[in-house]
Image 1 (cartoon, protein in one colour):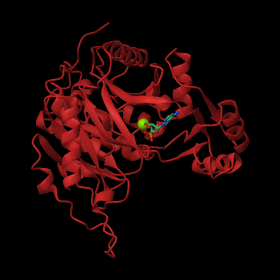
Image 2 (cartoon, protein in one colour; image 1 turned 180 degrees about the vertical axis):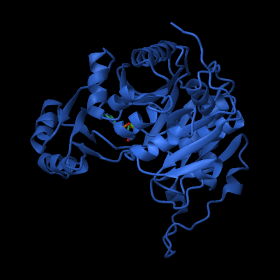
Image 3 (cartoon, protein in one colour; image 1 turned 135 degrees about the vertical axis):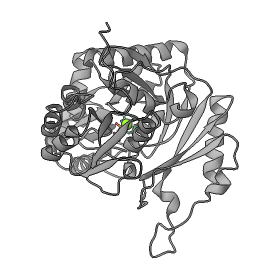
Length: 393
Ligand SMILES: Nc1ncnc2c1ncn2[C@@H]1O[C@H](COP(=O)(O)OP(=O)(O)O)[C@@H](O)[C@H]1O
Ligand SMILES: [Mg+2]
């Protein structure tokens, strides 16, 4: 069901909670369409800093500064899940906040998120909520021994996670204790380790007036629990593709999403789909949409929160990305440690390849500093091209 559109037109100001790379690239897409942008971020040197009209330096729980952000904006959105409910409310009193607080507070807590998915009948793998060391021990036992333990709040790129049953040299008790430490001795979920054929994601956009557009699935390859590369379209059966798209659309409708939402899925070795996790914002696995799809995810984000007609999501050409982590700047011989200059010029000799850097000032191991993208006539060739470029760095 769609209702009357009430668009926020170019020339208006968009506020973004978060000025990381996702906020930066949203701001760049918004700028290209003629919007003005303010961001709120604790780091005054955040990546969005260099492309926005103003940056408010404040934490995610600073309700007063959240109100100041909203006061200067026609609509407010986010690029990170950790915004406190108080800040969301303070902003919502002064401008529409999309996505809204109700959905965010479910998604920002892994326990709530999983319980919501289960309650609403979406397919997810076996899990237990845990709040003590005893809970972790019992959950591991109940789930068969090989488990991923994830903190309820704040984790990303595998942070706040511990594994049990993967280290043949450790006792179960040692691993359980290690997992409880990884959770920061606080609430979390213990999930059964799923036997994965592959990981995919689907991005869905929904506007306040109820229009929905869903993207073709992306195929994602993780290393050490961090996305290494991703490609659109995913090489999966049309049956699996339509199942994943249907789940994504149903989740967006059930939440009455206003904005964009990425759904990460596990494809099990016996061909089933489980929802892994939700992200109510642009997503690393859709960076390739900028080049592979008619409408890139960042423009779609802007269109959705501004209640503009959503863009087409069809693939125009296969596209892949590979993340550039801080590791490639690492120089063991230097006292500064991260001052190696990657050979970007060499990488850019590979046909179809482009470079995207986020202007982060301090590289660190595992920190996402940028990505390479490539287009080609097949998804396999697009992946091969970004990988070749990566090797030339
Ligand atoms: N239950 C699981 N079974 C198998 N692999 C998992 C499981 N949970 C996580 N992983 C692996 O770890 C990665 C990161 O976990 P995820 O829950 O997506 O956390 P993050 O918020 O860090 O992205 C996943 O993409 C997947 O590769
Ligand atoms: Mg994930």
